[in-house]
Length: 64
Image (cartoon, rainbow, N blue to C red; front, side):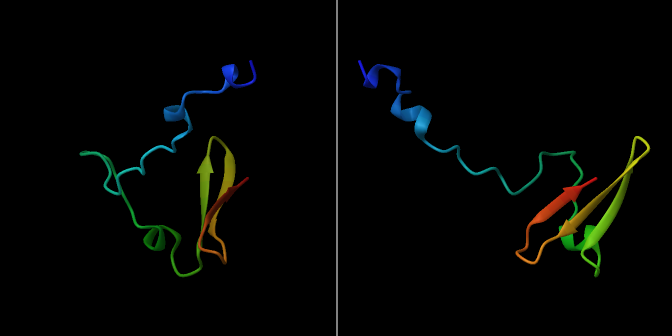
């Protein structure tokens, strides 16, 4: 009846955190190195320019 459409309990469990190490052979760079002292980077991709910046809360934001 009401509970019939609920997913199994296992489906409600959050996924395990991702590994902090990249897979072998994959490139990796620290965000501080990437963004530099100004905390932002401009990326040119397919004739568009994107801005990757560090917020005051320590999060990364990518905007067009």
